[in-house]
Amino acid sequence: MTQKRFNRILLKLSGEALMGDGNFGIDPETVQRMALEVKAAKEAGHEICLVIGGGNIFRGMAGAAKGMDRAQADYMGMLATVMNALAMQNALEQLGVDTRVQSAIQMDQVCEPVIRRRALRHLERGRIVIFAAGVGSPFFTTDSGAALRAAEMQCDALLKGTSVDGVYDSDPKTNPDAIRYDSVSYSDVLAKDLRVMDASAVALCRDNGIPIVVFSIRDQGNLAKVMAGEGVATVVE
Ligand code: UDP
Image (tube, rainbow, N blue to C red; front, side, top):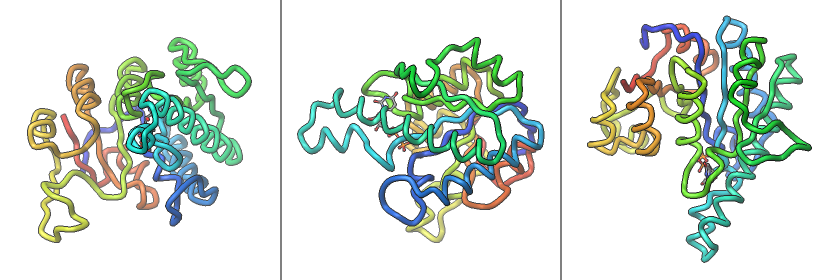
């Protein structure tokens, strides 16, 4: 149980959450399933910001490992997050959910630039705001982008949807005896390297008092439950 009800949240999904059973790219059926989850949470009366990673398409580190200039590769990664944002926008709008995409790298023909006050207005009007391109700078990740937007949008929590139902003391996929935490402190996450999110993202949440709620996005209806304070999750606070 997460216990607290969150009114305004930022949901961070990794790009892999859009991949489905494949090992690359965007699976439209999976995106639609994610969009249904988001729609259900929205209809329960919450305000939602979204950040989607780009790892299903391109990661800067992977490019750099093959000899690319890291910054150049990171810009490619940021562009990948814009593609994912547009895919999610499309899926949500097909379900009748009003959305706006705001990108940290300006792309006037396809989406808005990040303008905080405008984003707040969108939320007030019941729209979902999808923030793309992370923080807009190389050497960062979308985890940091999610923490940054959660802080500036004054979100009650940063929800991190993953393939497992919380944070464990070791990898539950390889260790059947792994123990799940109901709650864990920011400092334990950093000291024990629990890999909830990037250290810089965790530190930003800690410094701004934003709880990080780690939960499974794969269980249907779980997002709405967690937002209502009823689902299974680990709260980092
Ligand atoms: N990226 C970046 N700056 C940012 C956000 C993202 O350079 O502020 C690049 C970086 O190369 C990263 C890629 O975009 O690897 C995709 O984002 P991320 O790895 O966070 O995606 P996820 O793992 O969540 O799918």
